[in-house]
Image (cartoon, rainbow, N blue to C red; front, side, top):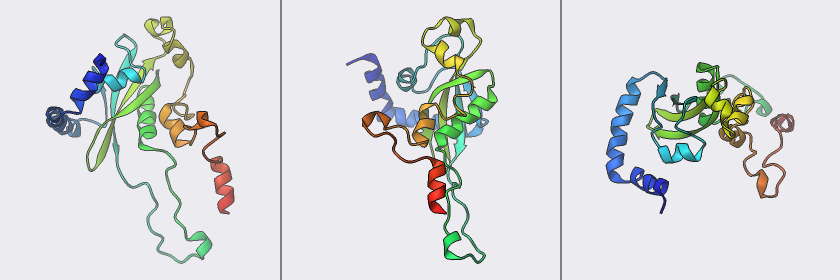
Length: 188
């Protein structure tokens, strides 16, 4: 068993659940976007492209849960226009990545993962890379990501691709669903 598998097992233990409660108490008092020194779940961050080097930063973002649908329609409508449409076509993780990218405009989002959650909020840790840092420009893997400007806003991160329905592309199917424009046209 490798080091990161052992690390994952310790994070799933009962002792760590108590520590997670303490993290939650601290995180609730912090601002919604906070830069952290080290990732909370190192095994997850390493799997998603985190490296402990200059130019790579980790940001913890708090996103409020719920409120993703329109309120119930009160006034009269004919049945065709009475249905409720989803307001947000994005998942919470993608929203967290976008907020982190707006806060740090000189950085590019590599990936993110769920740190913890409670009844009101989700906390995601977003891994960002500084585009102009010399250590990143020399790195063969990270320099390609640093060249892609605004990849989170175009839905090119893992969370963005999942929300767009492009995750299962390698399983033989062309796409999971038709385009969003095609779906809207079908509804009319």
